[in-house]
Image (cartoon, rainbow, N blue to C red; front, side):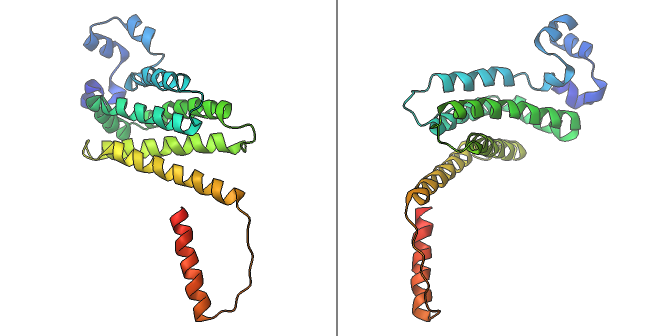
Length: 209
């Protein structure tokens, strides 16, 4: 990371990285398939962490809660390596190829949680829901981590993630409530009293969300 930032990503060769790391070029390629992967040395290990957390989750645990817990564990691991994450953030802002690679790396997390949700959610779950939930949870995770990196590590990323996960829980709860409750359709006169009643109903509905 230091070489890339100091000398420019395009100017640093794999040989230079190997020399700075005091290993052979062959050793570098034993761990990384390409130069682009050098900026993401922690992702494969973290994916394994997330996968273990999902596999080891209690079968009776709500699958969405299992994914949330694994995502929280992932963010804690990111935050446990502040120097790496902050340097990589600076680097990906100036190297378009690495920004694209970053998107690919995050898609690996989405694919993992999406497959878990497809397997664990009830059989009658709409087919779009595992994909939607996996993408939404990852987006909130990326937002919390990105805001933390942009601030130089000064925001409370875990608190932001927790707030986002609580929002997802409310969305799911409201979906469950409204999908099973009977609907009432009424035609009312447009009068001040009617507007006051409707305003009260609107406030009550907001509390449900």
